[in-house]
Every structure is written in structure tokens, then in C-alpha cells.
Image 1 (cartoon, one colour):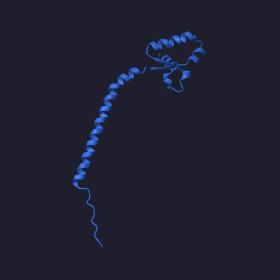
Image 2: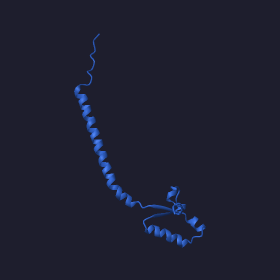
Image 3: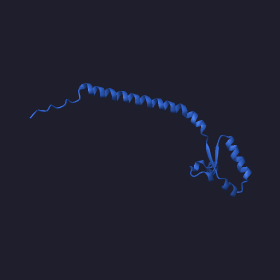
Image 4: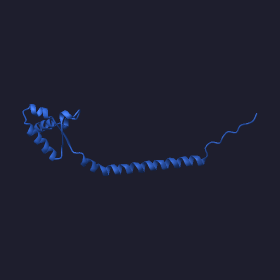
Length: 112
């Protein structure tokens, strides 16, 4: 019939240590996040320069409309020389309508 002593609860030293660890972790996370953001911001300009604007050109549609194949290729080449990446619509599985050259020319006519 012995009396069992209860284990002492966390003392002030343990609570203080936990608070210091949490504070250091929060500061490390904030500094790491700020550093990552600075790297991303600096690299954003370089990355944007590596990604040209994209246009989707439906060669089949242009041919059906009576365009000459050489004229279509010339248009694509002029766009590429201007910095655009020109993709044939048959090679694109999905894209926003705004990237379509036909959509751009249609909206340009409506704006006039």
C-alpha cells in the first residue's frame, strides 16, 4: 500500500524552451519565405523573357477559306520573327480561345 508520487508537470524551463523554439521556427520560416520570394521576383523577369507569347493558327481552316499554303507559312514566319510561338491548331489539345489567331482577328475587326 504505497503511495505513488505523481510526476511533476512541465516546469517554467520547459515552457520557456518551447516558446523559444516556436519563436525561432517562426522567424526561420518568415526569413525563408522572404528569401524565396526575392529569388522568385528576380527570376520572374528572366523567366518571362524565355516564354514567348503564343498564338494558335488553324492551318486547315485557313486552307478551307482559300488561303494559299505559302501565304499561311509566311504569316506564321512573320509572327515568329516578331517573337510569337505559332502552333497549328491540330497540334493543340486545348487552349483558351483568346490564343486563337482567328479569335484575335475577329475581335480586332469588332473593335474598329
